[in-house]
Image: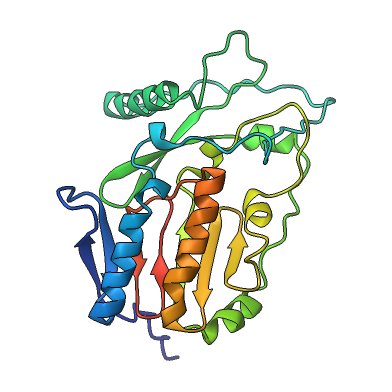
Length: 254
């Protein structure tokens, strides 16, 4: 039986410095992108640098009047305190650094006498880096199942196949930008704030946004409209994994 060919990228990505003097603030631009379009997109990014976050302190947070998180825990469930996991010293140091960052940004706070305790988990990232996550499996079992539907992939592909340029945006540390609140909230942030664009020049799912343009010359205007919404609701993106192809522009999450 013949082995299927492995899918390969359509074009090579080139690292382009978007913020002069900051070699860490680069965008990945497709090698097939013509110079005029490439320059227009970079200028668009430079005009909207305030929509990107470089550290946890840059995340202003979504106004609670727009949306809030709520943990709808089944009151009949007995709280679970996970047994503390032990890490090697080098990983303990990584965890402490991340906790200090979140504390400094006021994304987390110290509590006493907790009913629930969940362990930290370090997940490897590309480039020998680590992502700090929390093992919420016990807590998830105590909450109602989330039936937020997956996008119809075939419809998503069909709706973008005729577009000359598509931009993919992903909120930077999206869940750290929405506050918890006592009242329940069933809505999804990106569905709410991008509603006027959905079906016209945008597709959204969870914390991912696609900006699509039928004509390449309209794409900058579509991006500017999207950045205006991001700025209005104080939702921040990350430039670290920005990628721009002849047919795809991409911002990925941290």
